[in-house]
Length: 104
Image (cartoon, rainbow, N blue to C red; front, side, top):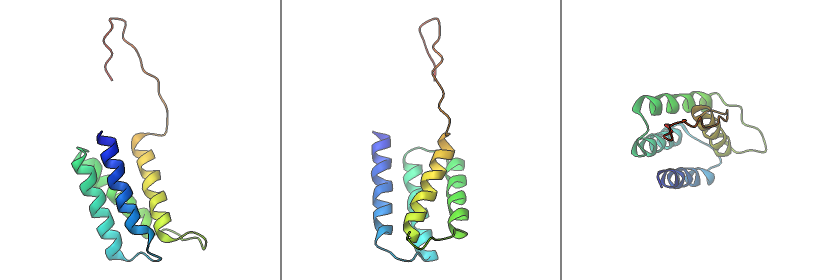
């Protein structure tokens, strides 16, 4: 349920961006603020949120915009890539305990 809520929040944040052909610094700051609030409300650690938002902002400020892609699509890609990096892009199996209780 927490992931659904977070997914819905991100969806509404990105929906606001889709209608814009250009991203201003104020639009970017507003989007990052909304992302920060969404993550904090989803009980993500404050330090993790701060680092995540800073990484997204750093990459978005210096991004090269391709002619066939609008800036809002580039921001969505940056956020997606940062979430993948944050969660880890490597799959790992579950180590089951022999006594029947497995801790994750």
